Image 1 (cartoon, rainbow, N blue to C red):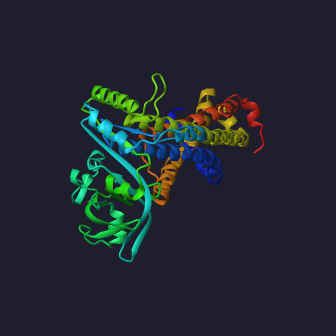
Image 2: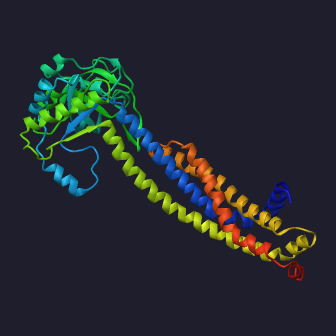
Image 3: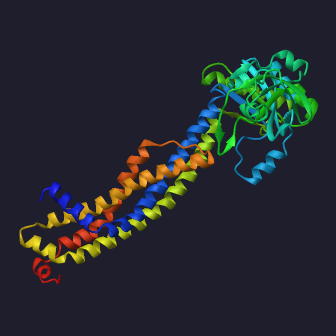
Length: 408
């Protein structure tokens, strides 16, 4: 029997039992859709994190009281016992780090912003040295950024995100407008580029003020993060970060041989840690989704066994007319493989649809991995063929005399 003829017979059989075929496909559809949705969302998160972290540049490293990602409560408690990184620490590193091309510092605080009768709560208030917007690759689309003079004199000037302009100023030209940041008046001098949402949370609800002005309002005791920019190349980053570590350890009087009393991170450190966490989550989710594929495969095997029983007489007739054992085996394997492949195709489309719905509703980033589409189809077809082997062998091994005696 030619492959084309076997494929045609298999499709006719599936079409003749449409409802049963659809119900049989559900396990495969759910399994493949789950895998595709998880991979798409995790891949989107990886792409998003990499792009956001890399905005600081591959040549930027940070020194902070605790890392950006904490994976346990015990770690959090240990990091909280560290001394805060203060302005004096930043000034010392900034003055003595010869291999650092640029250094900045930032503190953050959530607060209330008021303009006229409009206000916003839970706005991120950033206290920054003058170089920070440039180091964070923040594009000022209107107005200007901070200057060293603003830092030196604790000027009451502010940069704002697009949410402040759209929600509080109602689209007005923000430059020169006065807003109150936790009751303190500031004049807007610049508008930041719109960054959008992540996980449903806006990245544009922020106000940045000079660090010196920030500390006049919120005090100097809160820990800050030091940002340092090295020269081009991995070697320059390594030497600059080593120098920064030595300087900060010296300033904080860390004992020789004792661990750092702060955390030094580069973009590679953060991206690598995130990928290790996301890959673990992805592996668990895919393993759970794989159970659906196994269940779907078992359902396919059961239905194929029923099909063999129903078509015993047909098999006998075909064998009597000269069909070989391999022809019968091929027909039923193609039938089970096609059933699973169709379910896999539907699952791929459904999984991408689910991921897009999550992105629209929750703002969670998604990015389709092309390899996952092919992998989903191959795995689905493989499951169908694997679980179709036993029913196909049972059909192929039927004695034609016994099969012809079977009742219709």
